[in-house]
Image: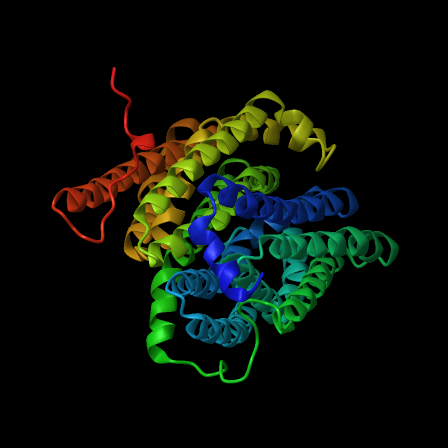
Length: 468
């Protein structure tokens, strides 16, 4: 199949089959990413101790910021690439690839220097103290020094999905996991490197994945690949990339603020063990949340391509199929959190006081997880069609307007439980906001169709209520 045929597949193949072929590898890839975090935490919990798990939770804000800045570029570039492929502008898609690599390098270097300069004060502000501060510092040093590796790897991995290679993206995540599985026991147990060893195992896996991706983009048969003439930045393109990538950036930036507030609230109401419990809960919640994000990543190039091709019927169909799949995944996660929380917690630690706190936290925090699915899919839809402002509004509303006030108020009445209950509260309120924005957006599209817009195709009868 030549490059033109590869691009046209997203405009001709059935939406259901496309969503399966793109989303399953993306979901597996993101689940593997979650497993990377879980495997690292398991090794740390059993190999270093319960306070090391608390230190991991303290580093979450820094990790979230790293992901936020990397996805600011990665999502913006991948979305623009999908749209340009839909317009049949392969040359511009190549130039966007060059922008992705250059911008990821620039941002990662600035990130590393800025955060290393204030690492200790920042970790203390995030909730570290005493031994947990030492553990957190040991874990973050290798990650900051090698941040260009993960930035470029994330950017290129988004590009593989956007250009029609979801299996390559899944393989990338699998290679990172294999690196963690192989190197963590060696670095933590055999060589006694502790938290630094855990971080170096992660970096080793990411480096293997980066080499794999570079080889992929050097192959002559790759649809969009490295070539001469793409290594120059254009201000107009950078502006578009940042505008589209701002939504995932704000999601992760707000998540950073939220985690800081959660850690501080947990320190006040439960101490180091409560922060360690959040470290475990967060890993388990992210297992399913990243699966939903993977579904969205598989859906994004399909919607982006057909949006660029002005085929609104296929755009709408991809949205609804994605919504059904996302709700199903979120429901499965909620049932796991409610029915077998203790079993999942015991994978991380056998420290009984920590197990008890974490089990209760897991049941409360996951009690409304079903509403997370439609919210993530809606945000992905807005990103894919270039409506960055709506995606940003939705994400900031859930975390900053709903979750932050709950974190400040609920513990005043319910103590430690109030911290946990703030999470499902924001999940539900975020769903309400997402549903309202999606309803208004789709109604506006349908109104344009009724007014005779020549470029607007009404939604297919499949999505209309059948007559009684």
